[in-house]
View (cartoon, rainbow, N blue to C red):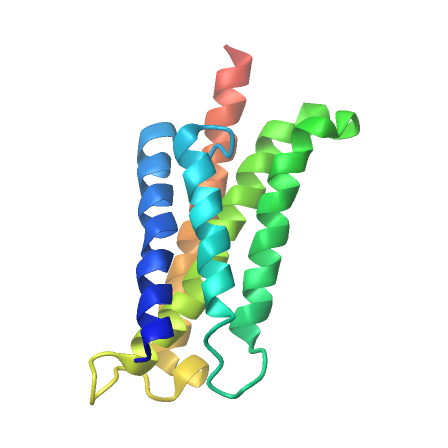
Length: 160
């Protein structure tokens, strides 16, 4: 792994840890909380450092996912300014931030399984590997379950 790859990997671990803490503590990633701000900032740093890593010399699907992640986070920060969406803002924010977190796992899973363990990766075929597809399927189901749980929690708190 290159020096840029190591730096990117270390930076990319920060938003994953912060999102996990936020989801466990608050049940969602609030971009206006202190940890939510640091999640957003470290995600921007992770995406920026991803652009220093180009195995093929050109942008990959992972880079485009990074751009989408940045757009999702940016949209979450703009929501409070859009009065037309105020009634749906809380759920939209949860959807945008949760989706940014979910999308980070796609390149993370593909890259990790196609490189580790060193010398005998679990999924040398990369994204086409059945193992990668199975794990991403499980992560997607967890994402959907998390969205549903956040929706139910938000609905129950707005009723009371």
